[in-house]
Structures are given as C-alpha cells and as structure tokens.
Length: 147
Figure 1 (cartoon, rainbow, N blue to C red):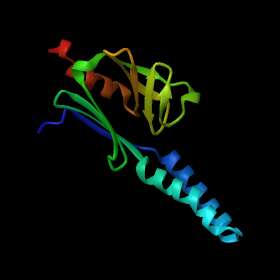
Figure 2 (cartoon, rainbow, N blue to C red):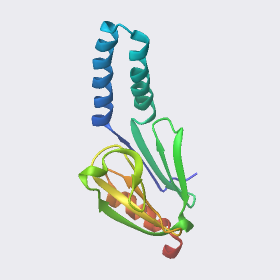
Figure 3 (cartoon, rainbow, N blue to C red):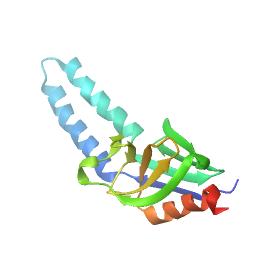
Figure 4 (tube, rainbow, N blue to C red):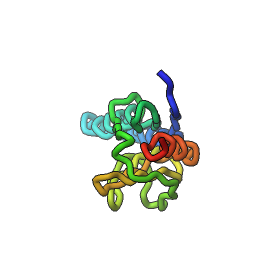
C-alpha cells in the first residue's frame, strides 16, 4: 500500500521531563514512611512516558491518522470530513499533549507549529508537527476538492 505521508515526531523534552520527575519521585519513594503511596505517581508518570513519547501522523487511503507512542491512543479522520487545512502556530499556553482547545482539540508532543483541520461538524483538530508545511500539503492533496 502506498503511503502518501508518514512522519513520527519524538517529544524529547516531554519524555525527559517525565524521566526527571520519575527519578525525583523514586528518591521520595526510597525515603517515604508510606512507600506504597509514593509508587502511584511514579506509575502514572511511567504510563505517560510509555503512551506519549511520540506522535505519528499518516495521510493515506483517504484518511488522516494520528497516534501517540505505540498506537493505543489514536484518531482517524476521513478526508471527506475535512473542510480545510492550514498551518497555524499554537500559543505557548496550549502546551503539549492531548487536550481540548477552544473549538476542538490539540494533539502535540513538541513545539508550537501545527496543522489545523476544520471539520464538517464545526470542530477543529490541531496536529502538532515539526514539519507542518509538508503535512499540510499532504492533507490538502488528499482532500476531495484537490481531485
């Protein structure tokens, strides 16, 4: 199968922050009078590190697919549901991760550049990318109006 576009961006800063936080919490755990309770935040950070180290975006077969890390958390959008696609810059306070933003949602592991998809349902979906122009061109090329 031909893949029109596929790119994985690693979130080095966010992974590094998770690891530093886990190391710090291990120090707390080792000196804690209630060591079992200290394991809870360590486990949560380990889970986040495993699930969100990277964001892979793929444009093929009439769809845009995004997945974090090993792919357990993913979203697929048929291109016929996309009204428009544009390169945007996220404000710093939008941050990184998977979360709601005004009018829709954002998936991002690093940086402030993104491609914003305006969907037929009126919502937006922003995909963080370190190569937003290339991603945007791939999405625009896949849109039905481009045919």
